[in-house]
Length: 107
Image (cartoon, rainbow, N blue to C red; front, side, top):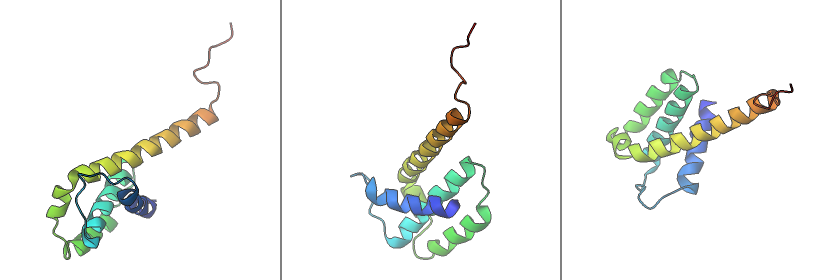
């Protein structure tokens, strides 16, 4: 799941690029998308620290960890985008499982 989120974050950096987004080197983009994956994974209860921290450290050799601070708005925006989509899917699935929930009750 974390890998899927990581790859989705790569796609979103290109597809939903905004004018104020910083230009990212390959290494900087890896820091950004893994930060997104770590954040989103944590929000859905997945503990990926054992994979994410070493991965971030390896890319920090080619791009400083300060990149994460400099791209915090981008990381937050992408993470929220994915979290919102996951929440929407979860709500839809729950509604399909309980189609009468929230409907008026017959008297």
